[in-house]
Length: 155
Image 1: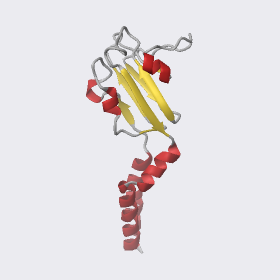
Image 2: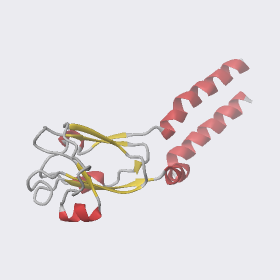
Image 3: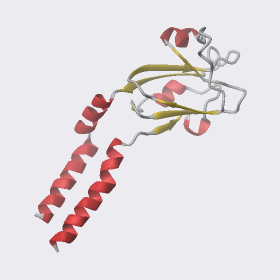
Image 4: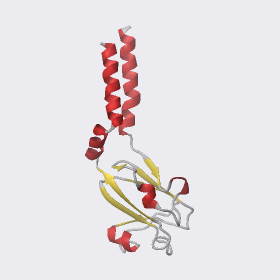
């Protein structure tokens, strides 16, 4: 009887633990994708981007592209001038968020950034701040309470 409870506990932990630390994939603009006349800042508001997550820019190539720029490039809608900074142009561009901090992306085709809103600014949280937010979140507290209750039943 006790071994069944222990197996149940381990099974629950194996199912729940990966969901706490799994990286997420964000399709920029959700079903609308990367297109003109969409409010990407509104889309990003309330989302938590963490190191390890991936942004996916979906669009009809070659109508658009994606450039990673700095804050000034974002504000002015200017693409990088360095020759090694080529735009992403596949129509299904995936960018893994590998470092914390501010990230800026634009479409450099025609006036898409300046006049049509094809620009995205996000802040990526580092792993330690992600862990801190998880520790204080209600979902973490529920998880811990569940584990304690299961352990109490087993013991």
